[in-house]
Image (tube, rainbow, N blue to C red; front, side, top):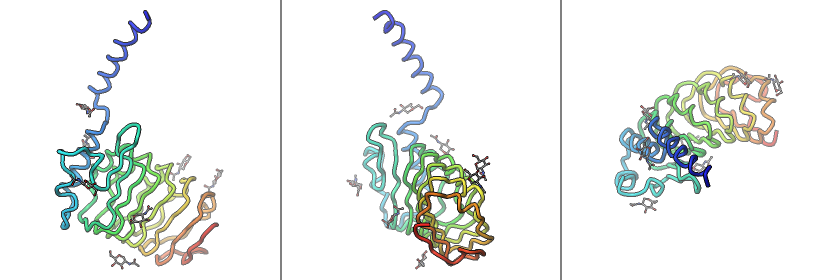
Length: 214
Ligand SMILES: *[C@@H]1O[C@H](CO)[C@@H](O)[C@H](O)[C@H]1NC(C)=O
Ligand SMILES: *[C@@H]1O[C@H](CO)[C@@H](O)[C@H](O)[C@H]1NC(C)=O
Ligand SMILES: *[C@@H]1O[C@H](CO)[C@@H](O)[C@H](O)[C@H]1NC(C)=O
Ligand SMILES: *[C@@H]1O[C@H](CO)[C@@H](O)[C@H](O)[C@H]1NC(C)=O
Ligand SMILES: *[C@@H]1O[C@H](CO)[C@@H](O)[C@H](O)[C@H]1NC(C)=O
Ligand SMILES: *[C@@H]1O[C@H](CO)[C@@H](O)[C@H](O)[C@H]1NC(C)=O
Ligand SMILES: *[C@@H]1O[C@H](CO)[C@@H](O)[C@H](O)[C@H]1NC(C)=O
């Protein structure tokens, strides 16, 4: 009981310090999402009335929150006619595990801030109009299992860091303008089950193939 007497105020003080130094919470997620909404074009008005502060973030279309911590874990806005560039604010969704914005009209570069999303397991950017090279920060997303970049306008070589993604199971970069060669380090991706490199400018053994169950 005496211990409790000391620890409760200490604990409250600690909490207060954490908040004062700007710990992220669902409010951070909400501002990131509102910034996204402001930034992108949404001709079908999918987000217009739905992503409103009058309703809980966790009920917004395309958004799923974690059962325990109630932070945004999934961002699923595939095929909603969205366009524009991807705003850096998405990098504030620090609990994000699943990102699927496939089949839209996003263009421009991927913002570096996405490299902060260290919990990501799935990224699908399939069928957009994204440009630039595959960023090297992708190799820092050590939990990544699925990476779908199919049918964009990515250029340049596959970054070396990508071969550090030891949990990668599915890699699809088909229909881009990726060049260079496929390094032997690809053999280090021991969990890889699906690999799709076709329709790029790659050289080497696997360059035009699609490989299942390596
Ligand atoms: C989130 O944190 C901020 C301070 O960083 C605080 O003002 C706000 O009340 C918190 N929101 C929730 C829902 O806990
Ligand atoms: C927003 O969209 C979701 C999913 O379609 C729906 O469940 C929810 O009721 C909508 N909210 C509002 C306020 O329209
Ligand atoms: C979210 O990210 C943006 C851009 O990366 C940054 O300027 C902003 O301060 C962040 N907001 C919060 C609430 O963390
Ligand atoms: C992304 O969404 C599309 C459309 O619903 C779906 O077909 C695809 O399987 C999803 N990708 C992943 C990796 O979940
Ligand atoms: C690639 O995406 C464009 C739209 O951005 C679409 O018209 C085209 O059919 C897609 N091609 C393939 C091979 O999926
Ligand atoms: C890959 O990981 C190793 C060890 O974790 C690290 O030293 C190296 O810098 C990483 N390589 C790249 C290209 O990120
Ligand atoms: C492949 O992985 C092994 C063991 O993790 C490591 O020792 C080796 O340096 C890696 N090879 C390359 C080319 O990254």
